[in-house]
Image 1 (cartoon, rainbow, N blue to C red):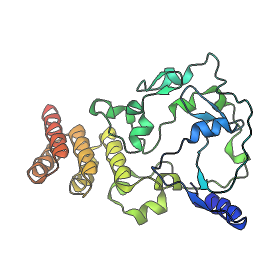
Image 2 (image 1 turned 90 degrees about the vertical axis):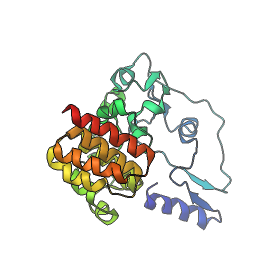
Image 3 (image 1 turned 135 degrees about the horizontal axis):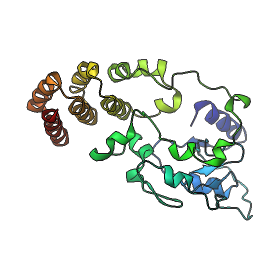
Image 4 (image 1 turned 90 degrees about the horizontal axis):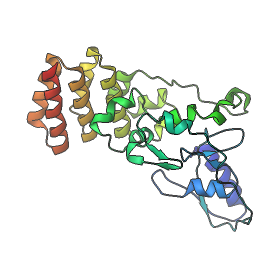
Length: 268
């Protein structure tokens, strides 16, 4: 949750004698069904909540409080998608198995939030660092929205396409200068992993030195995806670095990935 929004809600409740606690990232809370029952929006067939005027381009969050809240017992609509299946047809990994049922293990947005990514499907992620949004981009309800510049909300002016090598080699202080808040909420190891994945999908040989450096990072999943990226790019320098790294690598999953990357290099 945006810190400013949370502080406004917290101050409002505290002034009235109630406590308020922000939901931390990773804490499970049934935000979508609560939002639908509260009348904020309805479900799309991609399982996301769509709100009038904003479509599915909303971010649901929650605050835990001991304030007595009045609940309205009134009917609510679950969905208004009708016969439209645009999101189902557009999903690149077939994660939307049927209306309103998404397979998290096949969802690119879930992968980029830290979930394991099947080796054979990593190319489908492309150069994304967070989210996917294909199912939202094709939604007719989203295409009818008013451009966000008309809303009285200040939008962060930070790059949507930061330089990948700098991200892979940078630290948390650097990230704060180039990344918007919603990306900064991701843990650093997942962000670096996603950067290595994106670099691997570009297949640019000039990125090899940065990937070689990432092979020595403390986070196993960053080393794993750096190895995968080097295998995708191939070449003598990538092969030599992978062979050296295999001799010192202690994580079994990373070892397995390095061996697969070396085999990939040998095909090039």
